[in-house]
Length: 134
Image (cartoon, rainbow, N blue to C red; front, side, top):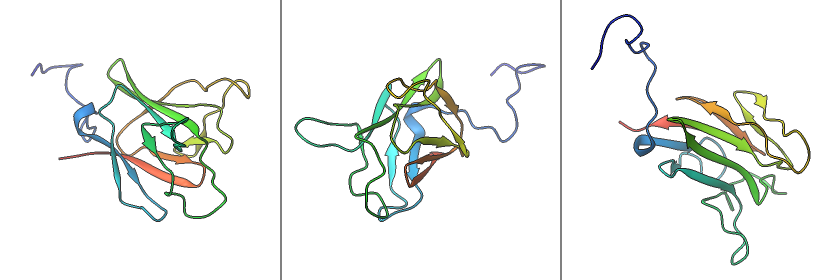
């Protein structure tokens, strides 16, 4: 490991790595379930086979009806060794640490937002956190 000025890690800041990073469900009937974030890109939403298949299927996760998760709600991706989330112009929005990701228009995705350990994500009425195993 390289040490010295400019090379020391920030104390308490854990480096995110795909093989140990998870999306933790914080509320709803399936609270405390984890989704691995080891894929380069994961589509989040509600599957409707055979026409709509998502990587992280939140069907049955919502605490109440009507559903607030869009079929294609958001994408979590790894880019330049950073974890990012993008809202896909979802109906009920994507929030990171209380800030809404705002697409430039109703049919365009938002700009990517970088996620860190402990980032709180809200998709519709579901809440999540970014956690690291180990």
